[in-house]
Image (cartoon, rainbow, N blue to C red; front, side, top):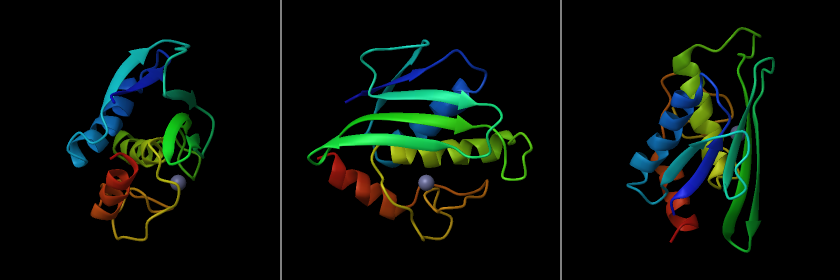
Length: 138
Ligand SMILES: [Zn+2]
């Protein structure tokens, strides 16, 4: 800690930083982040790219034993209906992908959790996700 997050120059970076920072706050700094804006950062644990024409985002990540090592987020910027996501929804979608990027493998069925398979704009980080992070990062 902190994890280095690498983002290419993009208008959505401040929202992406907010998404990661929300995890940092929710976990009381159990996970923490520093951000670098560059097209490539060899030392980054988490890299982000943006897909302006995609409706879906995806996050790949890897482990060594129990330890999270590296993740890549490809952030789709369209809604399921194919329109540009508004900021409030995009923030929640980013929090969802950031959750996977820091090691949450599955999805939550807790009401209003950002880790539900389908999210809405007022969803937030719920206790079950915080417990999962606390187990991953001791
Ligand atoms: Zn997911």
